[in-house]
Length: 211
Image (cartoon, rainbow, N blue to C red; front, side):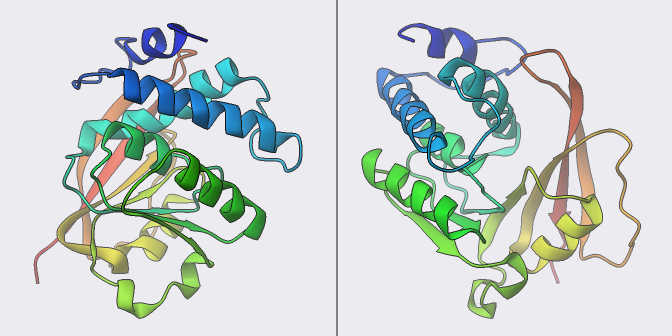
């Protein structure tokens, strides 16, 4: 896939305003190789070839860059195979990252990725979001979700980990709206995004008020 990775990441629908280095390319290639290998043992993604995984999952994950700074501390809840947290970490290598996943086999995969890609300041924790220790509360500039069911659930699960002035970011279709109103988070941005295949969705960015 030499050359294909950077070509896809330069797609204008992604709108990455950062330099794409050879290190970024090599780490994404290794990540894809590991995904393909582990997919033979456990079900990580429905897509089984590296280019399909790149176009679907890595591309979608990097849409979150629109709301990121390299210095942000990120908690990615329900990471699964590491989306969006690991692609974001590859782009922002100095960003502190905590990946939260309830399935042990998926955690083992992400731990392998962290080790093989030599991702510093990256922690994988095997726990349900509801059971994350209270010591983590208010510690993160960004809490992200990608594949969790409802928007209401994302806000409920994630708000306690967002630092004052921090953000909760979730990718959702246009028809999904919160039903609860008593959150400490308020919607600050609603960005229309387009997948590599041309499907339109939105990136919802909530901000936690200072109290």
